[in-house]
Amino acid sequence: MKRALLAAAGVLGVFVLSLLLFASAIVDRAANRVLNAPPYTAGSEAEKLYRDLFVVDLHGDPLLWDRDLNERLSHGAIDVPRLVEGNVGIQCFFIVSKSPYGQNIDLTEEDSDAITALAILQGWPQRTWNSLFERALFQSERLHRFAEQSGGRLVVIQSKGDLRRYRAERAQNTDVVGGILGVEGAQVLEGDVNNVGKLFDAGVRIIAPTHFFDNDIGGSAHGVEKGGLTELGAQMIAEMEARGILLDLAHASPALMRDALSIATRPVVVSHTGVKGTCDNNRNLGDEQLQGIAASGGVVGIGYWDTAVCGKDAAAIARAIRYTVDRVGVDHVALGSDFDGAVPVPFDTTGLALIAEALLEDGFTENDIRDIMGENALRVLEQTLPE
Image (cartoon, rainbow, N blue to C red; front, side):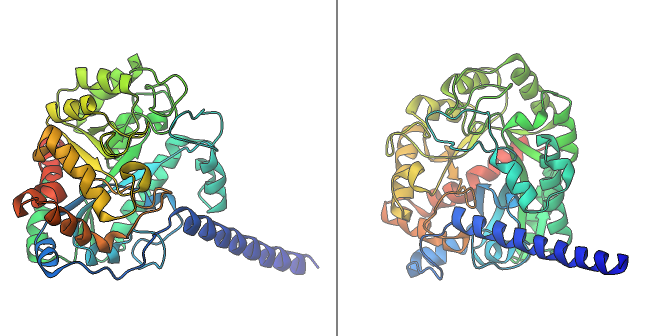
C-alpha cells in the first residue's frame, strides 16, 4: 500500500511539473512576441556589409525564461544557434530579478513582484523564491552552464584578456558568440554593497542601478519618487569602477542620471532605450541625457520595440539612431534590442541585416554602420572590462 501511494505521488509530481512547465512556456510565448517571422530578406548590398560586421547587442533578457539557449527555438528572439546565424559577435545577457504587477513607464510602485510567481512556475531553486540576490546568482549560473554545454559556441567574456582571445578566435570562426553578463536593477544587492564583489565573482560585468521601480540605490524613470542617487548608490558606483563593472543608466530617473554622471570617472552606457526626439515618452532619453552619456565617452543603445522607437520596423530604429547621431555624433550610438524582455519586436536576432539596410537607406556610410552596430560598444567594453 505504501509503495503504491509513493508511486501515485511520483506520478502526480511529474504531472504537476509538466503542467507548470507548459504554463511557463505559454507565458514566455505571450510575453516575447516576434511580430514578423523569419526568414528575413535584406538587399544584397546590406547583406554583404552586414556579414562583414562585428555586431554587439547591449541588452537581452533570455535568462529569465525556461529555455535551453543552446537549442534553436521557435519562439522568442535569442538563442545560441540564432545568434550565430544572425552574425552577432557579442550578446549582453541581463538578469531580471523583480517586476511589479502593473508596471508602466510613468509610475510603478515596488510593492509587488511577478518574478516570484515565474520563479516558482519555472521550477527555480527555492533559494530564489524570496531572495533577489539569489535570483541573480541563479541566472548567472545558467549562462555559465549554457556556455559549458555549448561545445564552444558560446563564450562568456569577463576580462579584457577574454575579449582579446575571443576576437582572435572569431576572426577565424564566426560560428561562436560572446556573452557578457549584466544586472537590470541593483535591488539585487539587497542593501549590501559587498554583494557587488559577489556579483563580480559570478561573472557580472554590467549593472544598472534601477529597473522599473525606485530602490535603495536611487530613483527609476518609472518609479514613484524618481529621486537621485543615494549614498548607497554612490558607494555601489565606486565599487563597480574599482572592479571594472560597466555602469548602465537604462531606466534611471533624470535625477539619478545626473548624479551618476557627475561622479562617474569611466564611460557609461544606456543599454536599451529610445530618444524623445523621435518617440516622446517617459521611457526615452532627452537631448541633455544623450549629451551626458556621450561626454562620459559612453554609448546609447537604441532599442527595437514600439515604446522605444514609435514604430514596428527597422526604419523606426534607424530614425532613432539618426536623431542620436545628429545630436552627439556617430561614436556614441549602439544597439540595445531588449530582445526577450517582454516587449514585442519586429524581428528576431537573425534579422539584424534589416537595420543595416535601413541605415544605408538613411545615408549612413559603411564605416558609420560598422561603428553603430558594434565597434562603438566594443570600444567601451575594451575600456571598462577588468584586466
